[in-house]
Image (cartoon, rainbow, N blue to C red; front, side, top):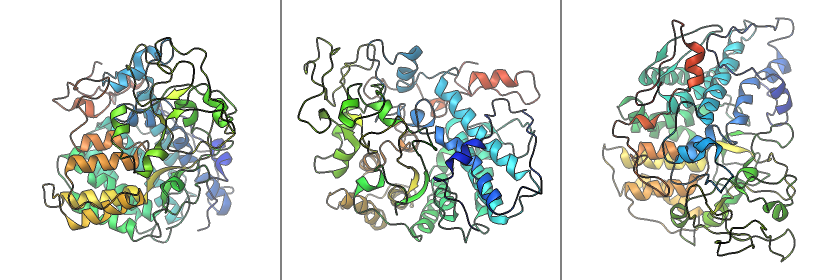
Length: 507
């Protein structure tokens, strides 16, 4: 079936966006008729609607923030009067997040808006194409995977106007698995369709689902994770020769991409990383059309985990003295603190003096993984990879190391795929790797791709101390899922399917 390129059609997608599903009892009425729906380009365009909700996932204060700022690789320091924001940025980093946090509610509403968009289209009798139905079910399964991974107990609704009580995490897992497996046959011939769900995207999501099955259900399924990774590796994807090429401003169509959010500065907006991480004065370095916000940065220990010979280190961070574009004139910060050893010259140092309340304005290695094209607008053009080959190679490697029930440091298959990743980064082969070493390698490869929280939980490291955070009081594991947003509990209060709070959090 011919499909419209999603990047070129993002404008149509935005126009067709289904509203956020804050109230799970919301009634959604179908307005399309058989006369104008379900055939050719009309269906192609309408199938874009469920993808629209993804454009908000990788900006500030939603999915990306919760996966990164809650970990040992990123934070948003409070720089005097900037970035206090009710204590929420620091609270995410120290694992004191609460049911009223904006990012928590934003993630819930965005994911359920995606579910609603899928349900709306699946409810229309004019949608009869088997591949289209499978695509919608696969996208919906992704949104439910996000909800299950982040909230655990969530309602599973598949029909318009339907209200259901919360299902257990294991029940949601079983639903997602069943839905994804049912899409493989109808999607088998849809293997290359940029930014759409394809058979390979489904295999990638299943690989991630099974890799974390022990977290989700208490029963590990590493063999299945490896099998699903193999199905992806059999596809048309190749590692880019240069790590940089995966994330450059013109990365659309990268041979490493399996599934992406096809951001566009005009028609597919929402990826504003330059604004989120760069200093105000960086506007002069990159000739940005708007002044950045001076927020997100990495932790010094994480930055230092890279070998200086690792090509990813230079790619992933912005450090050192910053210069005005095309000159040798340094950018200066007239408001630099008196105790900043660099003075007014803008110099990004990996060391951060404190998380809050008075982190230095220039402190912290900035997130530079995605190229900031000269003259960029606040919304970047870089496509954001949700799934890419480099990550799936490491999924295959990890599943192989774990296949026997305990970690095998010298598993030949695991080392083969791990060393492919290391070699691209300019690093030599290793002949053995511990769990901690592998986790560190995953961190270096998929930094700022919204996987760190998921990885730390799977490796049992999420509660450990890191800069600005003491060891979490997480003996019962309750912090491994976020609280159910208080706005959602309030919206359903008094109904037969009222939401209840996750254990360990205040109502």
